[in-house]
Image (cartoon, rainbow, N blue to C red; front, side):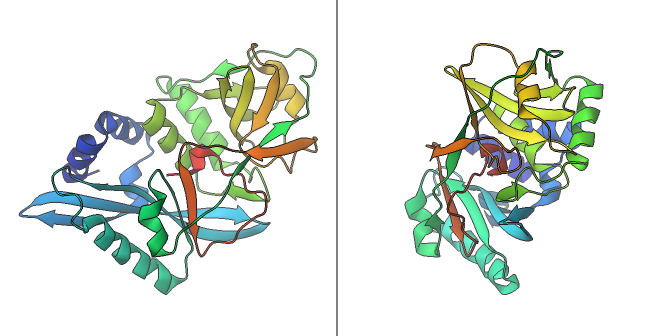
Amino acid sequence: MDEDRLNLFETVWPRSRARITLADRLGWRWGDVSAPFLKSDRGRLLAHVGVLELPVRIGGQDSLVASIHAVCTRPGFRSRGLATELMAQALAGLDLRGIPVQLSTDIPAFYEPMGFEELHLSRFRLDVAAGPPHKPMRPLSDRRADDVRLVRAALESRMPVSEIWSVRDSGWLLPINEVLTHGGFRRFGWCEPAETLVVWELVGDTLRLLDLVFARVPDLSVILATMPGGWTSVESCVHPDRFEVPFEAVDANNPETFMVRGQQRQETSAVSPLWMT
């Protein structure tokens, strides 16, 4: 990624330079998949809007959505309409191509006049127990070359985790988002018996499955049998339609608002935080 964008991002989001650089070094280059819309003055970058074209499966149909990300303006130049101008440029091009748009934000009122609407998301409480004991899940590290190769191979061969809503990118979205938000493969684990890359976190006594990457649908009870202890309930951030287990949809209660513009809506939508940009 060019120095102008790195400098702007570091000003707005401290530590972003190091994390973007790490993702680049690992082979997932954010700058290669993001189309930038820029506003500069006298050679100084003042504002940025990024557009990612993301292949998805929604309601059993393959399609393409545009994901707006990294909308920012340099401090001292805000409230001058710079980001609004760049958003208008980005949306005009996407409208000409008929591509629906999504984004995640903590200022939804900024995007509502542009035609964005909130899409209420769910998580899913799963009624499933761990199976017989298995070899424990192996934590993965971005510092081990073999682990990086394993993650890349798993992502390149993954099948859509859900027919309701899932990503179909070539493998860049998940590692870029994880590195940018957590500085590495902090939540990645490899479940060898199920041949599944598991992205997970423990929230209180709830095991939360953020994403599952597999070439064949795994048995969830096998995955749970490999997980570390300390949990009494299981939630999935992706729709569990492939897994044939009882579930209950609950409000996702995400810290940011997920918004769509011209996108197919689902009554029970589950979009993993790792699929938001």
